[in-house]
Length: 227
Image 1 (cartoon, rainbow, N blue to C red):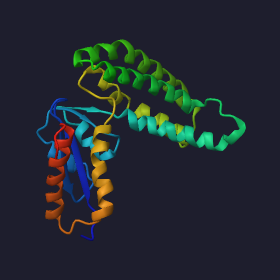
Image 2: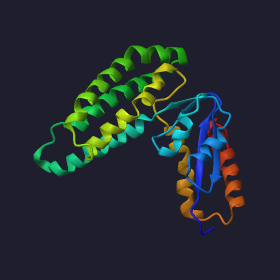
Image 3: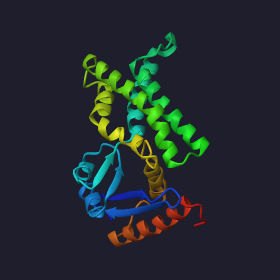
């Protein structure tokens, strides 16, 4: 109970039967995910944490990137720029241009939710509307990258998007997929908030037991059931 350890969360299942599963592990090594998903075949979505590279190397797995993480990096650049300009006005910078592309993609996702489209309709809409935006954004990134210091905040954001591009565009190929892994990020929040109350698991067995407990609770909530 004096060592640092980690709680992993996996979200899956079909839209009508969601599953949230927590796994205690003593390390943050990608081996934890690889062991858990050893015989899994299908899609995996994550951020760009290096430990997930193991998953992308498996032929049976198609690895998706996360647009929320891309957006966050450009948002941080825009926020710093706005703070420095203060009251002198804030004409749009390069980060703001990138955010416009991302907002356009998410407006399509908002339309999908509002219209309650089926997977085949989602796929068709993304092919018609999202793909052209992605192509334009990629052209913008390619043109802007050589003009931007790679070590700065903007350069880091651009390089992150370009490095993960092939994973970022997978979501338009299947109407069941999402553009980001916010579901997993939201699912870990109960643990993030709760640990301030309980602070420690006294033993690995206790940590594993709490993982089972929270898996049941959060899966029930994800399926509209009263825990």
